[in-house]
Length: 210
Image 1 (tube, rainbow, N blue to C red):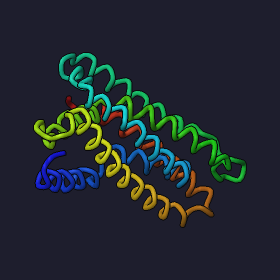
Image 2: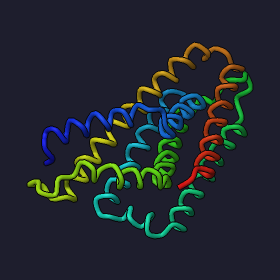
Image 3: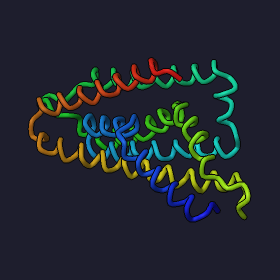
Image 4: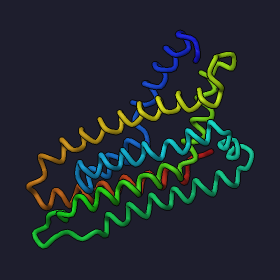
């Protein structure tokens, strides 16, 4: 494995990146606002599992394709952006119950949020580029472990740390909406706010330069 000094720098840098508000945190918060804390947590889990696709891609060198074939990067980015916008619009159009409260199918919504978040993360080429650009800075080619295994181990640590930040964000959003739970109108506003965040994320991803 890399030297102790390199590992200390790795953990410190990863923590800084992880707890700077980013798309994954906003996505998890939006799911929490729209569907409740349980959906937010399952969305965070989906993002976490989707992250391993990028870890493995970095370990096998597949992420280099995004550098070598710019149209592929652009295509994946736009598909991911459109998917986020579609999710946001779906939340805007979602119907509430007759009393104005959100549907009481939280478990089903959480399952849906789980699979949606995996798709969102897998379709995010920025994550692939991040792993490919960030992890090599802390890889020691002369270490006992092979380079691909170092990619997997360090990538897993990065993924876990980023997911911890997503979970913190979910609980903060959950604490905020807990006070509004008795108000059907407030819940509806939170649902629309969650949809607005997803649409905003989609537009941001689409317009963001490579």
